[in-house]
Length: 235
Image 1 (spheres, rainbow, N blue to C red):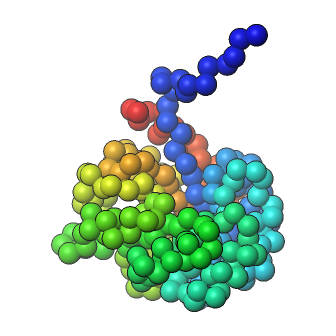
Image 2: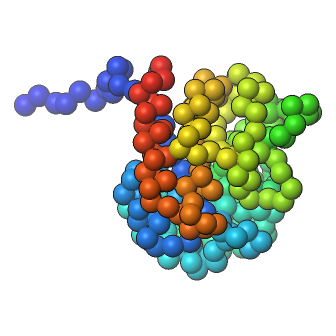
């Protein structure tokens, strides 16, 4: 009996991982996973219009099939609430989207046994002193850095920062976020594909009919745009 080749086909295009965030409804979670989302994000930041309670996040996370990862988004939250959310949502990744220090993020990962993502809030201005290389070195314990635009307040910005201003040699896995839509995600992937150890994408407002209310057609268009870009981009 011959065994299947365990090695991937080197000629096949890379499949960019897709995180969709800000879910509040069962039907939207089911639609996103059916379309091929790799991760589903739940906002646990009460001021956000997309916020859900820990209990609701747990209900929605139970809808996820195997190998689709729940992600819990926190903003400057307490260790006790983060631990409670992890206990309620098995297998979730942590996403820190506020002013959390590298030490705090690493300590929470150790306490909960969960990997974490850290949002790097990129200034919208062309002239700024934000150093992504230094930020990556400080947050070396993060599983990936989520690149979002720096605007007033916290949570998803819905704004697109200047991709061309990022350094080309970031020693971290990157997740491109901030104002992505089906129309521009391919451009973002082309701009940043080789800037980090890997590139994934994260979308929230770009697939919505209203805040926290996802649109199945926009989700389908977004996934298709990512897959089309995967076909076009070199490995």
